[in-house]
Amino acid sequence: MGLQWGDEGKGKIVDVLAERYDKVARFQGGPNAGHSLHFNGKSYVLRSIPSGIFREGTVNIIGNGVVFDPIAFVRECGELRAAGVPVGERLVIGRKANIILPTHRLLDAANEAAAGKGKIGSTQKGIGPCYTDKVSRHGLRVGDIESPDFKARYEALKARHIKELEALGYDWKASVAAPLTGSLEEEENLFFEAVAKVREFPLVNCEYYIHESLANGSVLAEGAQGTMLDIDYGSYPFVTSSTTTCSGACLGLGVAPQQIGHVYGIFKAYCTRVGSGPFPTELFDATGDKLREVGHEFGAVTGRPRRCGWLDLVALRYAVIIDGVTDLIMMKADCLDSFDSIKVCTSYKVGGRETLELPFDISQPVEPVYTEFKGWKCDLSGIRSEDALPSEFRDYIAFMEKYLGVPVKVISLGPDREATIFR
Image (cartoon, rainbow, N blue to C red; front, side, top):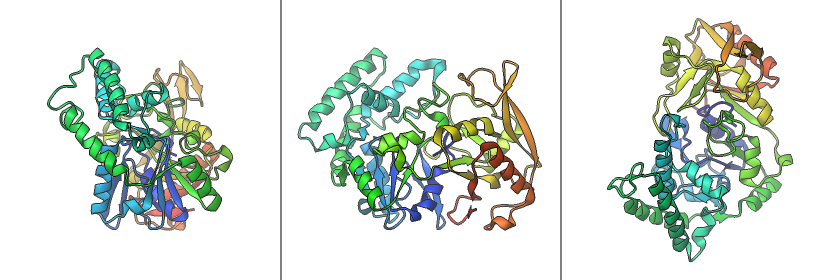
């Protein structure tokens, strides 16, 4: 689970942990979430395909809770095959995953344009409109592509979308119907070509497949985005459209809660956020700029610069509680190597009162109260043993564990697989 606003480094950790598991499953979100992986001197970005795809012998599952864009999926498969990854041998797709249509992406752009100053920072990948159709019971699912009347179902949903687009005054007839790469007709041709290729993959009844997998082995569930973007428990309305918390794994894969063993909570040693929405510890000064520079904080899919700030332990503790985290994993501590001092937010002041709780409306004025630590002022990136970590960094970790009540089991000190310390 990501414990912040996404971009915590889940892709690397899933790749590292995948060799311990038989299967890796994505359970929510869609191609708006880019998971970056680095190994053997190369970099990869995965959008819909689970991050265990590079591990030989590991089966990867696109679960029922994912919203699935056939065009983006086929493009991603092509990139992986070009890199020598046998995608077809390592991937299955849940039949109950809802499908993103080209008109979902148009609706995403139209809704964002209509919001004006109230924009939520959507990536315009069609995620929200697809989940809307799912909840309102109008959506198409991956299993529907096996039906002989799939084209007719598509046309019916498309007609519904066009009425909505016209009501919003959006120019969907343009030669380049942004955010599509061309006209709607051209995008539809790509869509049906992609659907034909999706039919070549094993389509499974995910809940039964996962049940049998757990009876005979182990499954690692891979979250997208982060807990603070959860539709119910995040910084609403500046959230994503799915359940990004631990319970989302149960919903998106058809797994009973008692089947969950460990909950790995992943967080950065500082905070970042992409797009609009509240961010109590955001820095608008040279320190924030430095965090962005040393952390290379730009979106893996969108390329957008991320907003940066100090670590927020109030929000992190909230996420730990919501997710039932058993094991913490800290990312990017090496990005703080050059700082003389490091701050962490340990409480909020809201309306003149100090609190350890996340307020109902985090968009209201929130003043972070900081605890300051002496920087370790040495290069952590080459360290591969816990014993070699400087005392200042150990103090930083110990304080965090006491505050959160959960041990930090893994420390990542660089983007490569090898730059990982298991404690």
